[in-house]
Image (cartoon, rainbow, N blue to C red; front, side, top):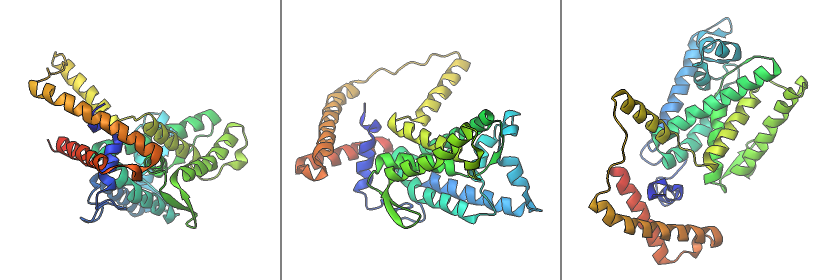
Length: 309
């Protein structure tokens, strides 16, 4: 595994950076998270479009873009994504809370994985959440409709819980709890109605897409746990198709003499980083010596240099 693939190096780079803060750095509104910023703005524009196209309590934009199980099955698959950019006009707090979470945690994940990977992660989260919603509708035989970014937001919070397990969040805006416990509590809250629907107890169901929340939570868990990365996978598929269409073979470039010269040094640095990471895990960051901290800084510089190439 190369230094570029080590998530803890990205974490170290952000941890000691003076620009690491909620919603981005000091260069302006979400300046360090351009993709999270675009997603937030796009969602607000869609919400405005919902308002402007509403007549007799019915929005044309909502009707065309919401997640509707019956219409998805009939072929309108774009709804598996577009619904995540719509929100309830009757409940303004729906969009307020979702965008607050995106503003708070989006920049952190984007800084770790990069803008393209963050975009793919967010959209795939919406798709998985939508599939979970449609799946439950088909199993229970009660097709319905849903809107909101909550599935993607649950995936986002779950991934953040892996990287920032000591980060606190206020439950009901009052009770401070760490992110992992927030995910567990919210997961149980969503699981009970879903189990009720599966067992035929419709009385526990409400006007919330609990299955979509659980789908996003599950996707975020496996994404972080299994270290899934979508951008390299899509790039590999794209390269394969281009090469196939041109009648070419995809081959690995030969390693140059310079690469051979740098490889032992890189491997040695990687071994040192693994040992330092193990020490942090067992004894805490305060146990690091001055030399080990310098090694951390060296690895962070290497990572930045590779990104700038």
